[in-house]
Length: 495
Image (cartoon, rainbow, N blue to C red; front, top):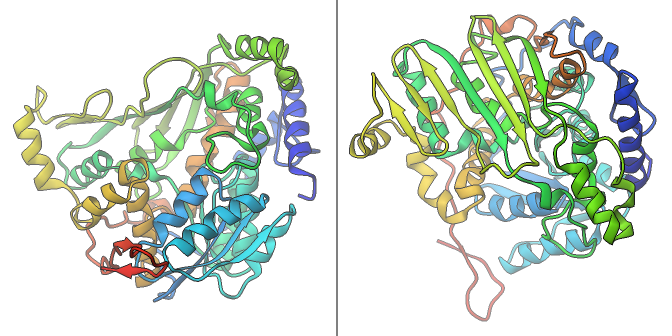
């Protein structure tokens, strides 16, 4: 991982684009090419569970010292959310860009908090953060290629990990996360914030109460027009410009033909179906359209600006991917991925059972019987069946923000679990499983939508693992801090 990041991303993309036609897909390193055969082999490998991390309770931490790696739009927002949670101390900040570190340091200073140690300027600077004794939790918000290497290194150095999605890009990386988490007994939670959105939490609680009957089918998606963002030129010295350093996300989407970002839609449905805790993914099949827009946009931009010349006149991934998953209990899940057409944003979030169904997009609706509930009935149901976590911190989450509040609920819940020694909602098996859908879908697309078995990262313990609790039967005692800056002062008031 010593390759310069800009050169690495460029090389990996070129290698990946050429490799697809040869029956290969690019891997984590610039020199690594993962063949379709290797994906199939890694998916079918066996593993002896060293320790079951599902339901694992680490020793409680009254004070959670957090180090952040990656301080772009996601990372700097996480810093400002975390300081509003009781017991959190931001002890370290890391980014390749010193300007990004400076930005988050100013946020700490604005609220009268002590400056964090800095790790910036070199490709390996983040390792120093992971090696600090004064860090309990490493919070990773970097480009995807760094997620697994950083998470593994942090756990190897005795740290719990919270890692942005996807937690892994390859099948082998998913196995690495599982094996290292089991061996070190450190949490590795993927930061799937959509599991904490308000409607998703409501329907999860209803499913746990059996209100939909036996669950039969679910649908999730990531339909989000990112064409403008993906082709936006980054400004390296400006924070929060909503562009991707080194054009990394365009390069991912240009060269990998599959469901690259499945977890937003898939995670909440998997939780409702108790996947890894009573059921498991058995196999999947994936189909992809051709590209009907990315090449045209690249060529149009390249004709006006030489910066885009490397993206012109090349093969691009298809626009819409549809992946179907069948579970061991005979349920089905559809997951869609489209970030390049003008369709309105949707994660679908549809669950269908023998007694009812729910769908979130384009309008939140629930049917318990043969017709949709009327607005007044739905309002009463929402009030009665919202889980305790929403009642406890939902209003403050809406004020703090982060995708409408779900980011803050996710962060609060993680810290509350660590402070009370509770299992985390999304364990390493969830991180590995939800992420592995991407490389498996690439294999299926390249094989005329052939089905491929999904690895059982729990090694059979899914049969006895129990669902995580969502109604704060334990814990829930972590306060939310209202932070204000007194006029003419840089000191923090906590009310």
